[in-house]
Image (cartoon, rainbow, N blue to C red; front, side, top):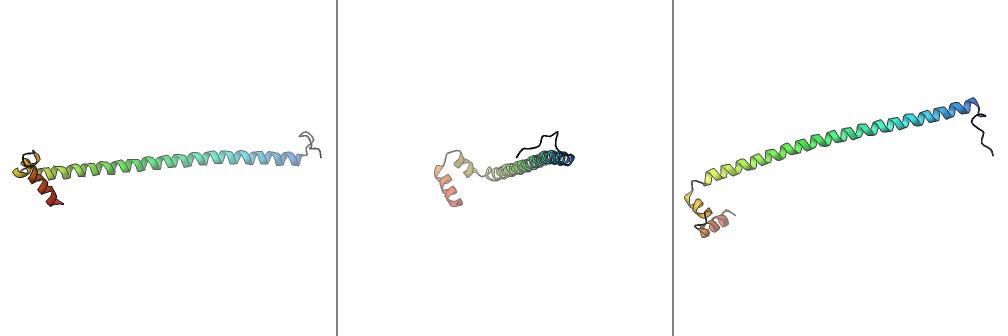
Length: 101
């Protein structure tokens, strides 16, 4: 069976080929546009999530720092605590840490 040459093709065949090619071109363009939109949305979402995570992490660091400052301000007036930390009384610091557990 011989395939007809493009010049010998009927007008109806030419129209069908034209619309098939046109449909494929539209589908390819739609695919590229949708893919770009999805990637852009995903990148924006990830960027926003990372920013939110960074803000939460920074807030936790500030809270941790504030808790340490408060604990230090509570414990520094205690002379026994200062002596134990300075290494002058290792038994007291060990007993104190065991008592806190």
